[in-house]
Image (cartoon, rainbow, N blue to C red):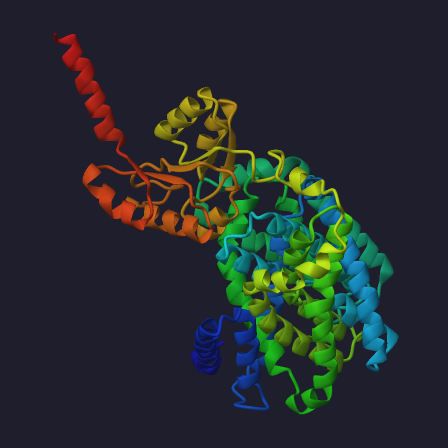
Length: 559
């Protein structure tokens, strides 16, 4: 393709990204998630307003890639032990909320004039809540490790599994992709079995050793992950299963490896950038002249999402033995619909199962509920104070779950110390702390360092200590101290000074709501003050400390 042909597309994409950035900045001032700003940018750039979107095929391609990457990242989280780690309360509350929301939402949608199939699609979409938005808001409030935060996250994981299952069904029945071989059942079943076989062989024999070699170069991990996701998406699309299912299968194939958290953290910015084009495409496709007729149904369904879903979660949690306060605070966080809801309905439209009017209705509900739920989550404790007298009437007299949920066996409550950087200095620190009875978790980007650490009988995570996304997923609840023992000039094979590494870590820990002891390693003690200003509570200088200890020993030997 010649430069003259590419120039208009390049200019258009640059203009759209800048417009999305400007509206995103305005959204931040209004405390709105970027999803709302991106859809608004699509509406503004669409054919019914400024008509800036001309390269529809190119933007649609980026939109499809974004969905494949998003489902790849979902697949990364679906390891074998996931369901066992959720706990009965999250599973029961999650499945119960999905079932009740779908049943009540379908009845409401049919009462508003939708047909049975479209009403089912819309109601199922209403049952999903936004993991990305909720995690961000809970992290900002430092409540992600609170009891209601952990309950909400457990329900979100159940919802993610449910929406993935729904997408698989839609893809297998011909929705979510154009053409392909979905109409040939023999090829479809055979292709699906072949893809499952590839995943099984890869997980069983190839994943761990291959990634252990690739992990020696962190940049290669990202390139491999993107190529792996794109390859599976293309293969599944040719078979007729759809790019979405291919991306999901690619993620699942890497979910059991110790590198999944680092891969997910490094691909998160790419996911966010590509999802911009999905939301732009969605906004540009809205027919503004038809939204007036959708406004009343959208308001009714939005009221159900904002009020009905939180009440369902509240009473299900209370039935499971939680206090009304815990259930209510968890329920309020779920009072919006998800970006997955929009993708799910878009797949139904692509498969001819849902009319575009229904998709526009769900998009309008998404805009309303996401925008309003941000303020509801911010005021959740004040809202609870208003309904507390009513909730007390329904609480059990003897609560049992509250104490169980705070037991040390819960995920994220198992470590006292986290050591970042497992070189000789970090290993000696870990050994010494372990010998003194502390529970220690190590983090490093070097597979050999991880191997040496685990040989000492210590637990370890593979990941980048300077990546905010990865740090945000560390099990920090109950941790007393985080120690950065990353040697100067080294971080996973990259040249990195303390001036780059330590501030990134300190900012990431602050964003994750961690307020315990933070120790960083420096070359010289005169650098300590700068890091203390950024939040470090302890500064380690291994060379100077070792030299002082050596001087003491030498002086004693010379007496």
